[in-house]
Amino acid sequence: MTPLEEAYAYVTSYCASAEHCTKEVLTKLARFELSDEQREGLLDRLRTEGFLDETRYAGAYVNDAFRFNKWGRLKIKQGLRMKGVSERVILDALAQLDDEVYETTLMTLLRQKQRQLPGKDGRDLRARLYRFALGRGFENGLVLSCIKRLLPGTDGNLED
Image 1 (spheres, rainbow, N blue to C red):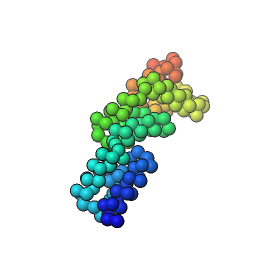
Image 2: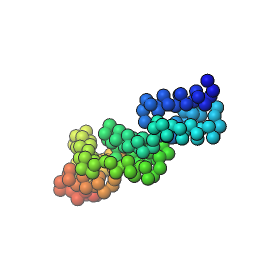
Image 3: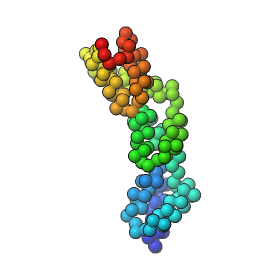
């Protein structure tokens, strides 16, 4: 078996097991002694045969990161950028998130975090919830409005 055939067999098996982006496949191909032309030809073949699809990968990444990790749009977007996915594909994939479900998820996370912080109230509680939600990658405006709804009697600001 030639190195090209061996690499093809390896990456088709790799891509068939789960969704992967081009950057991940290139990392796997680095172990084989292939020229740049061979690598590019192999990537084109994988795309043509449906083994490699950035749009499909981005959609799966967004779905999994939101459903299982409970990440916000900003953290998901950063993760996809680090994987080398184009901005257009990222924005299209993020558009599949339902705004109502997204906001409900944030409210649920904030309630859970609030229960973990007994005895905290006022500015300290708001600040902790705010930092927690931003760390999860949720947008500033949405976080402030959800905190305001969660803690009635506050204006959502982090100041007393």
